[in-house]
Image (cartoon, rainbow over the protein chains, first blue to last red):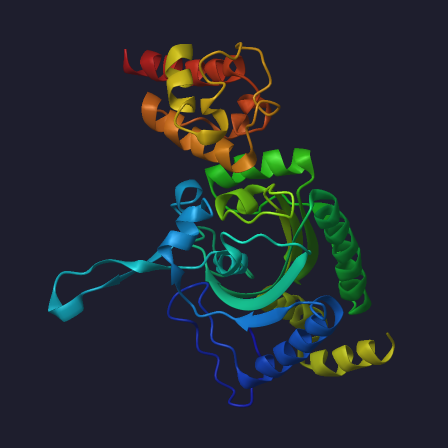
Length: 273
Length: 85
């Protein structure tokens, strides 16, 4: 990726594809984006978390991810005491919201609950293209409530997110998700979710002729409520939804659009909101 | 093959209650199948029948019923058999 705005002028290629360093100028843009997302979408969250780059394997297994997408899951191996390298109780989170559900596991919630977090995620993607990172940051807002509350929330934030991104100058097209997860199982999941209209993406051009999702808004129905035994006042598993922004993709799309003028354009867009 | 598919379905909590009795044309999505279960069922069926379904049938429709699953798996298993013979 060409970064003429880096102060050092260094253009080192990453040692591994899809694993990129962020120069300080990019971090400044991300800080501004974070603040905007928090103000617009996370202001009602009961808490905001910054997640570590690892997660308990048990949480990922309970979420059903380890069984469904074993080919995308990154694992952590160590060799305690100099023994042979072996898997540990930790894996690399594939999705930020997997950190959230263990926090409410086994609880009964009498009111809808919103939590937000930013997480460093990993997916063992097998397609190398601009924006297809293996290590990436997700800002997620997770909402738990009744089926009707969750669907209304998802519809509202999807509209609001598309309007915000469009206001930043991005093409911001809202489409049913077509590649929520890569691989064969991802194709099946995409087919099912398209039919059920569970997962929507907001896309933007991240490089010449390369359009990718920069945000998504998904309804999980009661999948995680059941898996983590989170119930509502009547005892039924709660439904959940999340709004996620791919921070690195968003940055890439804005850089593609504005180059070194991103900060200026973001500030201008916020002034005109 | 249908009995083997039913046996695999019994391993999944969302389908175990209906796997034995549901008719081959009945809608599995209405009977409790969800997106994650369909993915896990795909992997288990492929393991059980030592085959890999082509991308073209990785759809919600293929997982609609025991009949549609049988059709998709049979096509693959038959094709594999004819290639081997």
